[in-house]
Image (cartoon, rainbow, N blue to C red; front, side, top):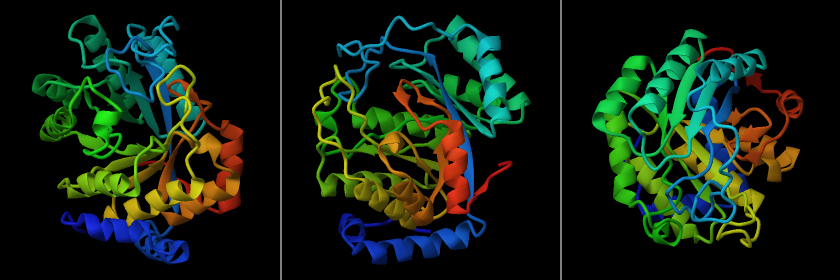
Length: 317
């Protein structure tokens, strides 16, 4: 377990011959997850669209013509959200993630409803994860008291490339949000996205920031860009599936005990590429037909995928 990986070391891992990288990653993965158990997580968009941030990849930004504002909102509908959580649990998920398209958590009725949702999800016996932008110390503490398992706040990309993707929030603000969540006793869900015009060094730099956190994030989502019409990145060429595989394998080596989540962009991977990611160290997938506002493989397809790979579904955390 290390927190002092150099940029050169991580770049070297990302550039290894693929068979060598997979061999190293699998040795780590077999040691920490000998039964090849994969957690199924479900993700629900509670508040959709109208976000003040200008993230270049996001169809929920009010800065982008793709803004999906106008969808039915669930932010005050506690029972409706808990019904979705029950359905996800019945389908096999043991982690329920809820997203609010906010720059920061808003106090008042929406936050009180969020706390009720967290309590309800935990009472079902599910892990509960929230992503809702920046938080204050008091908000983080109240979420922890409500039983929240994890707070998601992705870095998205490297510090060096970040300004090409987002201008409305600084990298330091992201790190401060992670610190507030951690100090409140919450586990962290924090990863990034490839395919946004970054260089290999940017990918290594982002992984270095993640691996330098002490402790490592308990959950590391690895996303591939889903280029949505109406966003600044709509014409970005598709990411290379083997590059996503390299990111999964390298994340597993750098952060042995983190849960590496195969996240957005999975719809663009064929079955064989997804199985290779499971082999290389991915031990969680998002499960269900939608990831916030982008498509995800169907539940039946995922069950068949896991059966073909010969991995086990994690029944409880």
